[in-house]
Length: 325
Image (cartoon, rainbow, N blue to C red; front, side):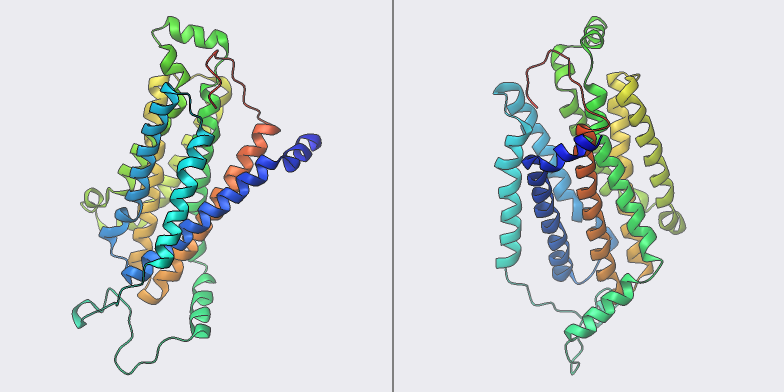
């Protein structure tokens, strides 16, 4: 075990992975700050719109990956370096170079946006720091951060490792699947197709507020702990299946769709809780704190996945497929 940890720490790819995650994670947090600066409000009907762009991008990326992976054998590493890093750099440069618009508010919408009234001096940097610190130190904020962070931990562990291990079948298991009607393509590309199905579920979850608004207000405010518990049940099922391989492929598609749906719903419900319970001066630092916490959980989860792959839970792949990952 100690030797495995030493080898992981000395691997250049491990540190390259962390640098890439820090790069993309910081750009995501910075994007949230810029978005809130543009909006100066956080209307609940816009909650889904904040993540729908990234959800559609994930679906597009999986489609593109499956096509290129099936035709010319391009790997996930190529997709990452060719598409993800330039896209992230573009987002950062666009946010830095595009000037912030002049924010105009009227007396009618003053309840939805905080702004400076005529004759009021702008908020000083020390005042901003004190306001952010006072918000961060509120005990009611941290359960929201930790619940959403743990949800992202479980879903990334499922998609990034447990699903992959669930489909790394032995040669005998792969032969049994083909004898029962499974195709070679579906066996060799099930990981990518499951990722695509997951992205559809996550996108549906983050954009389902119009449907959820038909329920009572109190249900929307208090439903997020239950989605976290259901995500934990999903994580347990996938953890067992990654070693036992008892789930048929069609059932994996259904479960991973539900996994993505629960993750999207958890994000949506927690952001709705933030919008409904915090005033405008607290809302922005709370959203930034939640986004930063989620980014740290994402970095930790990916690093842990790398460690598990090289120590306690190494993946195995004897399917006879082309070496594409």
